[in-house]
Length: 116
Image 1 (cartoon, rainbow, N blue to C red):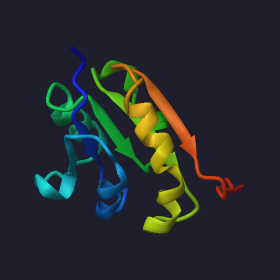
Image 2 (image 1 turned 30 degrees about the vertical axis):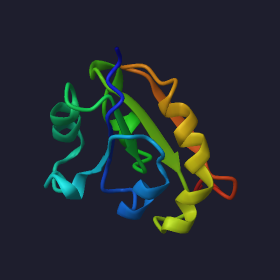
Image 3 (image 1 turned 135 degrees about the vertical axis):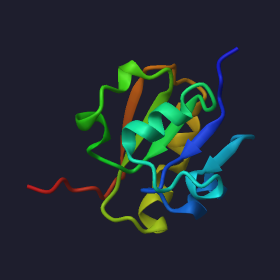
């Protein structure tokens, strides 16, 4: 059975956890991992968590995510406010049910505009 424990990184507001309708969801601040840089967070999460939810748009560009036995969901939002993340909650919950280890999915908020 695939590990579906979910870890939310520090780029996502802690309160977003309430909108993730999975049984086992943890925010990094709850376990003292908020200061870990990306590679250390990925290594620490691997084997313990099956899915990482991140708001770090650079995560897939600065790390070879396929090297880690964890599925990664990247949320692209206009700001780091909870209100920016909320429109993606249903999509996140759907992806959690389907994502596989070493897979990355990028979800865009409806009002997301990339910077130029």
